[in-house]
Image (cartoon, rainbow, N blue to C red):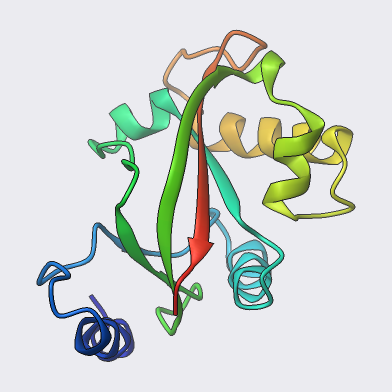
Length: 150
């Protein structure tokens, strides 16, 4: 965890003494700086309130899916902490079953399902490149809803 993330987490723990010593995770969104920093800003502004990882990428990187109640530190690409979020709902859906409401809650691009789908399919292809895993309507997606709590 970066010093900035540690400081923000310590601030959160001061307000919530029963919070765990460590957050579920300290992370940036996306696989590139431009998108990661845009998403961090959207969280700060209260626009981005969801995220979507594929089950396969979580397995590939040996990460457990978030659970309701998990609290995490969101950072920019460079590790600057900008927010604390709490997971409020988890749904596993087929990529083909992600709907307009979820795309709007993610808050990215023009907030339409068409934009969401094009951006996320491209992301999943980049992340899963070389694994033999197909990015199609049957790819399982962990649709995580969250609220900014600090």
